[in-house]
Image (cartoon, rainbow, N blue to C red; front, side):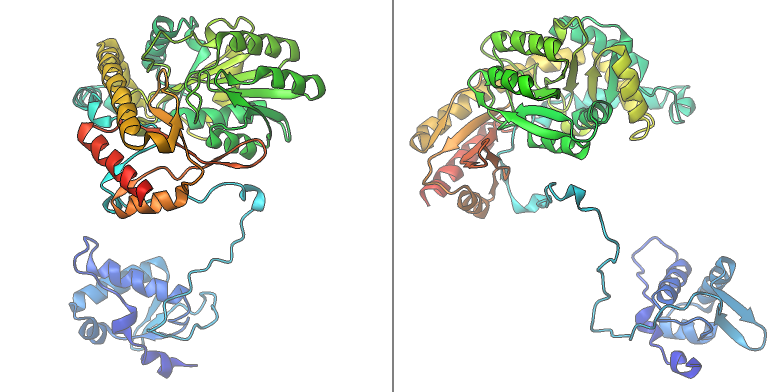
Length: 497
């Protein structure tokens, strides 16, 4: 049936060839024929043109078509019948014929249905680099300051080692490479007063993987997780993915309100409390010493865990930072999470968890099903940088630079748009929490800024009542002086405009 009709197919149009690709022409031809068979355009049992005929249509050599047919025959798509011709296998399941229309694009809508349990997650759309020249981020480090040359040299040493074949294979370093774990133990002891053995540390692909593992270990369906009402939205959503039920307490100049937490604990079983003790995201406030102590006491009394996200502990400008709660916890209630994303560069994706060994063992079980083992080569290279003091020197240099940039950014904002905003200079961190006058529409402000090639944060925050806060978390650390000048000037013109 239809043999004569299909012989009239416009092969020159349905078989695509791109001579700029590295893929051999015969593979392009065979792949294109397979796609048209699957789509129902070339039917089972259909007789294909002879090699000489098709080579003329496609402007390729006869040898190319013969190689393509050999490939199709080897894969079982066609059968060659001596003295009769080349035919599409008749046993291939027949798909309903789709009328061929060259002026209509193929249907791209999938019939696969996905679960609605993740409807609360945001849809992200990335902007191309060409769409903006200047960026005010939410608090990124300046990767231009990172010790990339030293990291490259360390990576080269690792890759060129005689142990490279073993390094590139699967390993049993499920918690991270022992060298880096050992270096993290020393680093945490020196910088944070956290004294633990190596069996209390696990390396992760950044802090987000750490949160996924922690919540999978801790939470059963609808277990209560308490956070600040204005808080790190990603952490909230990760807890919800794991089945957690979020309750919130207010955040003021001293951090999360632990008195409100105590009232919740009196009537509700709380499984975990998430806290960012230094430079709370997004407001940049730090949890006071009094509240830290009370939070620990409440965790012991009511039996909940504390997830302490200390993502930028290393950047404190006006005074020494308070020691983490993990440094004084003697009952194993604190799960401490840190990252090199802000310390060195976001794309390194190296984080760490410090917790009781029993918890680390459970986290390790979960991590094997997310990432059976990490980037062993990178972990060894970073361990080299710690051993040689390069990370510590980088932190010292960055701290000085970011301190100066914080002061400069605050001064520029005050001089140019001080009457339109309200903020408190943070004592550390990489960003400023800025609330704008109610007369300023942030969506309009973003559009005005983008028209002048400045991209500002899109993230919005709401209070406990669900009211949208007219504020932005604006990073200063990643901008040099020239970029900062341009950014603030555009911000000023966009507000006035």
